[in-house]
Image (cartoon, rainbow, N blue to C red; front, side, top):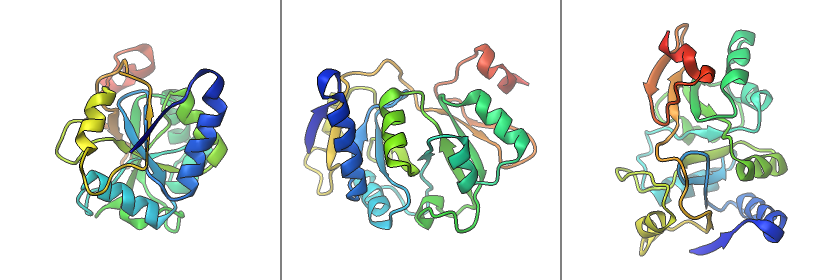
Length: 213
């Protein structure tokens, strides 16, 4: 597993390297605004299969997806104007929204698991944002851990989980230990009423106060 840091004078070069790896159907471990995650091209079957293999994730379990903006999200899921306004209030941020998936949206079908819904998020993290703007594709945005084990903010723990495994991430981007500690909060927007499926990194701020209603 090759490890790089993306900061300072090598920031632009590092972003280009991540984008190049993703376009080449690779899986990249990358820091996010919550925990370390695995990125892969969500429109490429080989890349998605690799992400599943690395995590040893059951094929009937869906994977969340990072999007660049609400406009991109609308191409993947059924989003009314009311829901779009809501998403613009909570994104970018630590909230994954489960929505009804559109047919023929260009995503690899394996990402839906056995459901007709999809989990989308815009992370509040500059590196992810810059990568998303440059590649302009939805990306698998799942936590960087073996299925059944805990997600982590500590780069040493992330590397340890994949060490000596037959299938490993192609590239690891290190930002040291992250400040967060929990995965994103997951909310169900596929029905009329908002339902919290996982509190995760749940912030009781003005931005999220409507979750209490």
